[in-house]
Length: 58
Image (cartoon, rainbow, N blue to C red; front, side, top):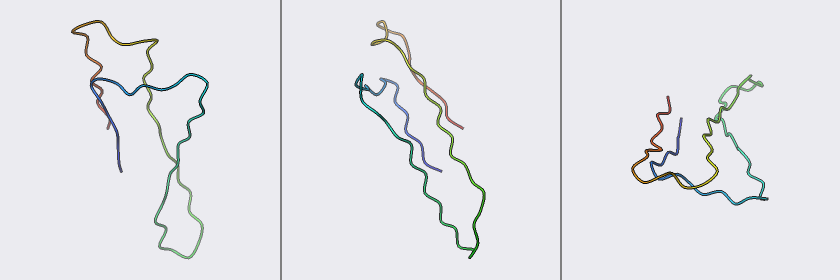
């Protein structure tokens, strides 16, 4: 499982569309049930000085 995290945050542009894509290596010859999860923390602007945006992803 991969993850992206940033203590500074990742800027997103208003009005743009973002998409989560999940890829699976299904080595069986039949369909499987699977899901992807996205944890997203959003703020209206940059944090105040000294405020931490550190996130823990499990």
